[in-house]
Length: 423
Image (tube, rainbow, N blue to C red):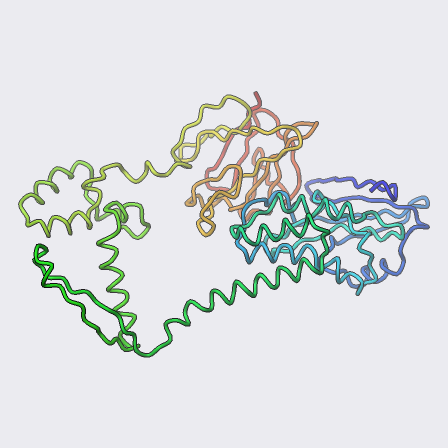
């Protein structure tokens, strides 16, 4: 930002939320771009208003429901990852339609804002004839984003990193993403194509009930029509699972019905009953009732909800009586952030610094963030559905609010109430 002598200030209040302020000399104003985006503001830049003050033009940008992109760091699916880069780079290639200059975008990861509903990125744009960014800033921004966002597809991630290191070009980069997506879609389309034949020939091995007589085994060929193929395959898969899967499989599966499983106190009775049955019946009973040999209650697997932490530093201490984490320790240094959310079953792995159990519905998957600066700790609501409250006062979205020792912090409105302690 030093190239135009412009400094971006961030301010916030409970009425207007967070907004940014930037000023440039009036003689450096790009009137063509200002007139175009003032009439038809594209959605890839923050909406703004402007006014002249003593020979300078002041721009005020409204953040609204958008949060900083860095608050949403984590691993993405390949499609989400490619879409994010598409949203990041496409504006720099299409901005000419609005008479905008790519060098007038504030190319910094600190000023990238993310709309989690639209899953799109917005920039801060300063219509100045001198510009405010160059290739070096663009490359640094891309490197920072690649650190914030990772992808489950290791091949795609390696391609992205190589492109950034080797003369990063937006057009070539987007073409690489498009080609990789096409290749991935083709590989997926090939899977169902193998089952299109109307008749499927499969060798089925028939084994005699007398397991000590292998000479009675024989191979036969069965023609399965398309009408009953799915029914046969599902039955075959069930039989294969019974043979190969461990006994404890259904104990960890979401498909198991806990109400029908015997309690720990009933395990002895189940075993005694099994001793009176044939071996085949006992085996089937064990598969249906795995808790008879694995008596540990399922609640012990729920790490997020049941773990007890002795607070030894700064953090949040629970003040309610529900089965929620007793302590949320916040160990961050100046300039770092600590995100809070709810476990996302669709992703299957943590996406925030701390996550409530998936059943804590009042907490959003990306709910709030605590950051630390020279002034202390601040909490920011990430446009959560149920809101974040400090001392029973609901915070505006994306608006930093200072935390003082002893203040009450609530995530949603269903009992996730904590007290902030600084040690």
